[in-house]
Image 1: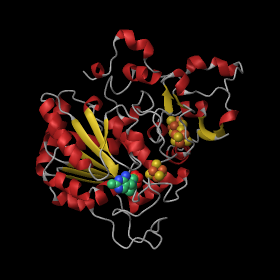
Image 2 (image 1 turned 90 degrees about the horizontal axis):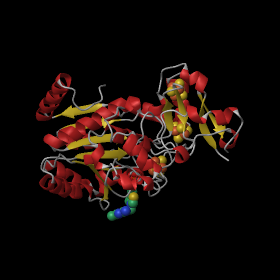
Image 3 (image 1 turned 60 degrees about the vertical axis):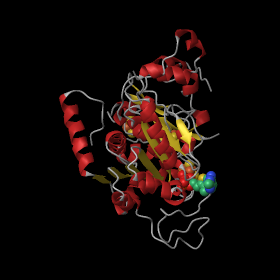
Image 4 (image 1 turned 30 degrees about the vertical axis):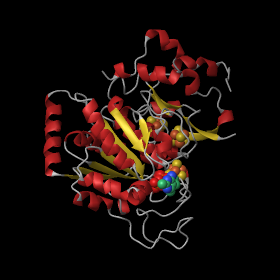
Amino acid sequence: MYLVADVDVDVCSSTNCRLCTQYCPESNTILFDTERKSAYIAVDRCKGCEICVGICDAQAKHHAIKMVWITDLDNPFEIRNHGFKNSIVDLIPKTINGNAAK
Amino acid sequence: MSLETIRVSPGFENYLPQEYYDLVRDSQFTKPRKVSEMGSFKEVIEEHPMCAGCAMTLFIRTMYVALPSVENTVFIGTAGCGRLVLTQGAAPFIYGNYGDTNAVASGLKRGLGIRFQDTPKDVIVAAGDGGLADIGFSMVMHSWFRKEKFTTVMLDNEVYGNTGGQESGMTQKGMVLKMAPNGKKFEKMDMIGLAKTAGVAYIARVVPTNPARVASAIQKAVLIAREIGPTYVQAYTSCNIEYAIPTPKVMDDAREVEKARYGFQEYFTDEAKEYWTRIESEKRQVKGPATEEE
Ligand SMILES: Cc1ncc(C[n+]2csc(CCOP(=O)(O)OP(=O)(O)O)c2C)c(N)n1
Ligand code: SF4
Ligand code: SF4
Ligand code: SF4
């Protein structure tokens, strides 16, 4: 079990910020959902460094990212399953139905 | 043009890995991108074994996004950490023996110039401080004195990260490292000053705290190397392992070091300045390639 970054979509989407996407050392990891206007994480690429948390807390001052146990995520997005996506809205109903793909 | 380099014959599409398909659909191969758009397009770097939170990884990620022409870029690297991610990007990578990078790049750049007379090919050496300031030092200097038209990027983590913490010429005086237990006895080498002496056309010193500035420096370095002469970018890219920086503090460290002793610096020769001013004014008139404004 390990920690990965998780974005609070409600908090993030109320900003127009996109800062963390430029500071994650990993490519294709913090992605930006153009429909929800929020950053989201490809958990299979996240190395758990917490740099994004510091950027969101201290630089953007939005406190939208937390580190969570990967097993606590209901329906984590994995880029290896879906490829690059501009929005993952079409994947969301699964989470609402509790249909967790752990 | 750009996309044509990677587009696949229809019959093969079903056999493409998803990652490749994404590159053809929505990446910097399909149109130039800015760092402010990161997260909204498929980036060309795939999974790699660099340590979590490594500033060098962040720098290389930004450098890739900034490339004026990714399909016409060839990287030369060598032993050291950087090649672990450079090899996982969608631009050709050539492994020069440790120390040989700038000699290999000189020959390559000249050869490419003969083979592709109508298409500029951008050659970029990206290697560690040990690779460039220690063992590769003479080849770096001679490539500069010979005015070879390619870019040298030093990934300056101020240590031999890949081999467990020996001091390099770029380590700060007094620094105690795992394999420098008594502390380094000599000053950090002034590679920026040496580059000036050698007449390098464009020189920049950056820290990855400001992605747009990093991107702008890379673009200047690559475009000036195409036309004018050698360019050099020296980037502070801390090694959080050998310097025992907790990963959530990596950016704090970068900001502190930048403030204390690694502030942004940029030098142009007169010729390079004139060329860059011309590029900028042409860009304002016609919509040229997207370059990062600071
Ligand atoms: C000719 C030669 N000598 C020594 C080595 C062993 N070696 C591999 S990586 C490395 C140090 C790399 O340090 P640096 O260039 O600063 O890059 P970093 O790993 O810090 O990014 C050394 C000495 C080698 N590969 N080839
Ligand atoms: S830094 Fe925070 S608020 Fe800004 S895009 Fe990232 S998660 Fe959203
Ligand atoms: S924890 Fe590190 S690797 Fe994971 S998303 Fe944040 S910055 Fe990227
Ligand atoms: S050893 Fe240091 S420089 Fe190398 S990948 Fe790890 S943190 Fe980065």
